[in-house]
Length: 425
Ligand code: RBV
Image (cartoon, rainbow, N blue to C red; front, side, top):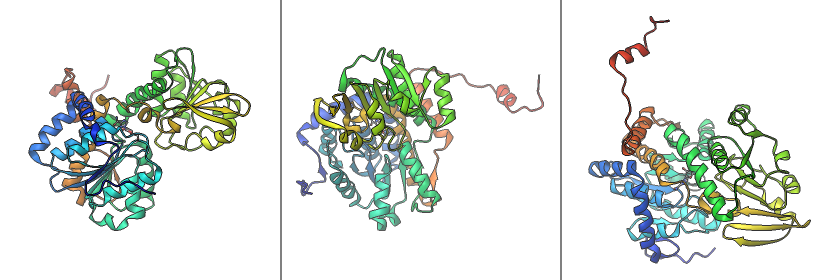
């Protein structure tokens, strides 16, 4: 591999001259992220991350830029890479680099370049790591284990990453404490549901411009992310079919008014398919064999393994990019199947990722977790930790306040009543 390395500088981006365009995007995101901006004000006075070196591996978007610049304002030093080869917004990366942030990310990196960038961020020997899907933590553990001794702790943004890190902790393989940013109300009930729901539909529409109304919209996986996609697709008039392996999740889908089917059956009637499972091989050859001519297939899970593109390729006569982020596979039997964003996260590759307003809360959780690790990480047990419940309420409270919404407060009598087990009917 040959990377035309930007020698002598602390960044590698596609085109630094895009910086002013990226700066406007970041300004826009800041205007929609009041929780982050209030944390920035508070912690730039406190310098809570002073002396911390934070390696980050998370989609380089305008929202992430607000997080990066909040970390820097709080005294932290950063070195950053993207966590997906297709999610970097090149203008945003340029704007961050132009302000002196150390960043290694560009849209369309190869897998080799992706790991090269992670290794570059590890060169400054971080004290904290910040992940979205754990590729950075895995790189420390698998390829640079000597760095773990000086790492105080890490954070993890997403469901897939938390799942694997919990498995590592169970096996005793984890070398430093990690905070599960994903596993908290102000993350999964908002980012995962409303963020994924809106941005995935946004990606599908930008890539295809199809009419959603009247379509059979098949969502694989009815977890937080899948339920958000179902909600928004049905709001646009699509007929939603969900596929599941977990009975309670399937039951939720049914009681929300959707149909549950096996993928084997849904494959034959779906017009648009989206995978949101975190599992590999959800759509495979036998499904492509029965799909309708014109079916659209995409994924919103973190890794690109949910749709088996090798199986599709085997059945294919020719492929062309018919629109940006939309590839037309003409099969040997003449049917056409459209794959969006090469089976990678459609919301980040074909659109701009989750809207700023929800990332405001997710990244507030990220930021406060870094502050917690900086303060008490050395005393934390080496395992995966949840976010304290009061952090959720604080973040949601600030968010509501900035939206101009007021809350009731319990009176002293009501608080006493809550716990009163002598009272009954
Ligand atoms: N995600 N980030 C963005 N606009 O920066 N959009 C989505 C953004 C995160 C989200 O928190 C999710 O958990 C993760 O991407 C999946 O990789």
